[in-house]
Image 1 (tube, rainbow, N blue to C red):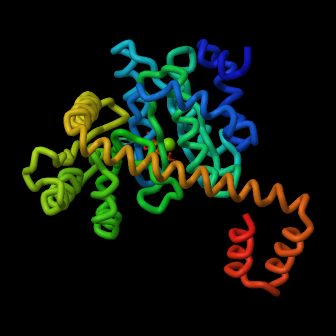
Image 2 (cartoon, rainbow, N blue to C red; image 1 turned 90 degrees about the vertical axis):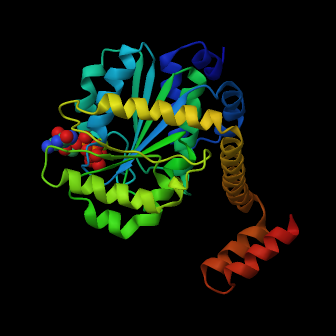
Length: 315
Ligand SMILES: Nc1nc2c(ncn2[C@@H]2O[C@H](COP(=O)(O)OP(=O)(O)OP(=O)(O)O)[C@@H](O)[C@H]2O)c(=O)[nH]1
Ligand SMILES: [Mg+2]
């Protein structure tokens, strides 16, 4: 039985090995992914994003507890683009989530920036698909940074939660429109700290001025929630709002399908770009004319536009 069949049969070791293949962007991926792609489509994918230290992992940890109470299975993918190796910088997350370490229905993996060529965004989507195919009910994806990260978390998530803290006023001012584009739910975490309600009101005002409150039934009114992740306060409301958002998506089938179509198109173009790049580099090894062309670009004798045009016209 091959690795994918083993994984689809519920083998955790096979799942782990497939994650590693994706992480290393192994050439086998092109053959493996179609089989995985066919099986998915059932999981709820929830993205958690926000500035460093906002409490994303603590929230994820609390959400896991809640989701497990509902007897649903959970996979967590923690992405840390600043870490060259997976598992290093997110060690803290591992420890924090250790309460679930014995729980076989919770699977936690972290992903660093190893593997270039825009590979992080690609690998994230592939791992989410893998978790989905395995059969996890809920997939939580944690990414650091709002707006500036290489990965656009909304491309993989059904619901994106933007986690801020009472001190995030400047971030909100700077990113305004960008935040509204990303967030389906805002959370002001660390609500035990001063100015939490001011932060909440600042966000509510921003939401009310944004396009989401035009009153149309096809517009989702972005809720602004307050949490205290360390104490578990506000988590149930966060989970309820998340489920409400998923329901909203299902009800507004047309808008949802439009979003999905855009995502599928983006994914196709992304895969095509990476595949073309890999194919080109493979051919450079064999074809002298291409090798010479690449050398001319490297040495600055030929501009990259002319060179790219030449390659495209030849294939
Ligand atoms: N006061 C207070 N501290 C909190 C709260 N939630 C989390 N923290 C603390 O904030 C710190 C950072 O929490 P994390 O959950 O690691 O935050 P994160 O957003 O995952 O951090 P990165 O992944 O490093 O970006 C930890 O020391 C938490 O204990 C809260 O509600 N109130
Ligand atoms: Mg974290």
